[in-house]
Length: 79
Image (tube, rainbow, N blue to C red; front, side, top):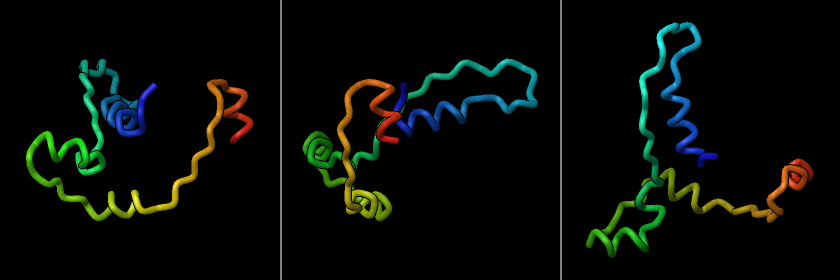
């Protein structure tokens, strides 16, 4: 499994369907923007991390959280 950022990065490594040569090997490393965790990052680096406007807008949205158990049935029921 992968978080959305890593999943998109992985998809970017895949060769187009029309290419017959094997895809090269890839190493994927991913992380969130440092401003998302400013309370940890800023003390570690000793300076403020600017908050990008799109990230600030996303973090300001109302969150909807629905907790479910670790089963496909509960996920299917939620969907």
